Each structure stands twice: as structure tokens, then as C-alpha cells.
Image 1 (cartoon, rainbow, N blue to C red):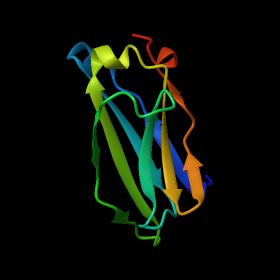
Image 2: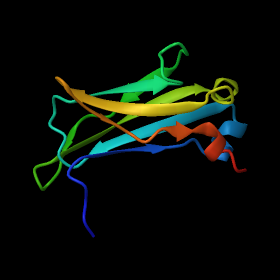
Image 3: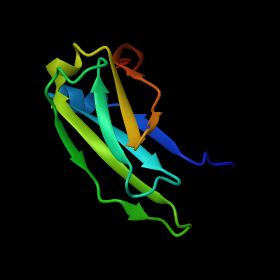
Length: 109
């Protein structure tokens, strides 16, 4: 099983969580990100929707590579109006953008 040198992955909110009125989206960044990369979120391509963001500490893995995650939390009714979410990891001029997470693709309940 080969692992990409760098990857970022988005995990959508669960339907149970949405029923409780909250949507949490997690961006996992791992495999080779140095500690000076920063993660940022784009909701519908802009920062116009307000949300709460939290970040895990950077973890140095046994293989000498870094991993961390960033969590985006917003009310479920806001999430229902969102078209897509992306997570962008940047370091200087380099940027690695996750595949967009489209709400209409993950609303099978």
C-alpha cells in the first residue's frame, strides 16, 4: 500500500451530528508536511460564512513526518446552505488543496 508523500483529506459531518444541529468537518493533513505549513478553510470559495475552527497539535510521527488536523464547526442549518468546502495547506508559495467536499454528495441519510 503506497502512501502519498503529502495528503490532505476531508471528513464530512455525520448524519447523527447534523440531527443534533451541528456540522463538523475535519481536514487531516499528514505524511510529510513540515511544521511550518498552515491549514486554511474555504467555504463556497470564500470566507464569507462564519464558523468555528480548531486545530490539533502537530504530531511528529515515528517516520519523521508530520501530521495534524483542523476542524471546522458550523450550525447544521448553515451547512445545509453550503455548496462545497475545501481545505488548503500552504507553505510560502506552495499550496496543496484538498478535493472539494460537496454537501450534496454527502447528504445521503
